[in-house]
Image 1 (cartoon, rainbow, N blue to C red):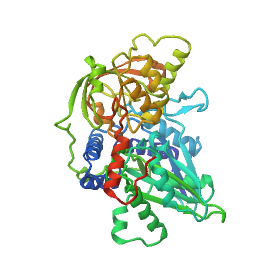
Image 2: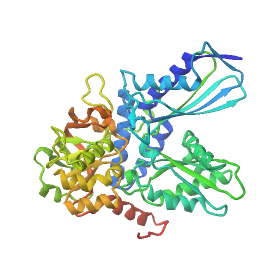
Image 3: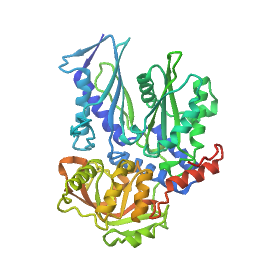
Image 4: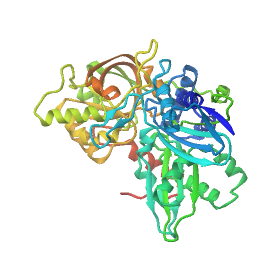
Length: 508
């Protein structure tokens, strides 16, 4: 019989969440370093360089890898011989208290992203609780915890299918992955669950993402069974699509494919797929009654010596004097360094603006988008002497349905986000001769260094979704959609798929 203290579980969860907020798993960094060395696409190589540089900065500065510090997911195995010492909370409540401590830590405050009443008011809980917790009672006398902070951009790209028993899983992945877009911030991992029932397949996919990256070792030694061969087959087929880092086109789209399976009904073949993004965050600890868990800091010498710097060809843009004519001169793939003032706004702010216009009302005082750029971001709160916390882009497609309204009614010239834009947004950009600029997802702390001042100008009650005004200096972005509607997220992957040449190119 082992006695576990309530405080030990709470503090272990809090410490683990702080740890994974600024330390990438070393296996991910080593796999990403290999991808960087092998990458031949200049745009993808630049994006990976930003992610690797950001990772080292976060590890050294103990600040979040990504502004989206995730929804907490925990897999907890409690030994049947464990007893709790003076517990006043359930294990779920203990974990939630650990989440609360971690996300409100004044030395490294993490962004609260969880909203309650998800089908209605969607109020932010302000402390990132509750977590999603999966328990299993097992033989033994320890408490084993695997915990992750899962970003919304990658979580939103989860897919599920009920295949026929004879259908090919590889073919389904090849069809599905391009349609997922780049909002999950590749290169990353694919977690795949096969079998069980519908909900079991998705749970297996999520749990698979907790496993270490070992694709290079697997390929070197060769598959020992059918699932390992399937991992290799999916890995090769996914990378042959040419999607590349941030969807810009390149050799590395996935760094590994992890699969867990479970027996299923003879008539069924449920398959779940969940990607892990460039902000891969998970940790594993075990409590045995000897106190709170201790996670040793990683050896930073295992990080590659990659120090991102702006390309010599990057053009500086004065946001305070930006004109529609200048925007019309930008070309897809142009690298820009933004200087001056811009406004922010994402899902909730766009919805509020749409509601104001629907009621015949004006924008709030102090909000003027005329000849300006909007940045789709929800930053982390600053600590110590910071102007703003990590402030990387959010997935732009969620704002697609508002794009025509914003361009037609506010005088907006351009937008900044991550990943591709959909057909509706691209048509609006073309119609209004605007532009869409892409910042690198997974480089939030690096981007925040370009922000020299920050203030909330509207909708303060929305927390991280409020409208801010940032004054930036040399903020790096790439022209992703130009004024003619040409998109690098269409041309880039098509070019690199042709170069790789393993899968025939299809034209939609």
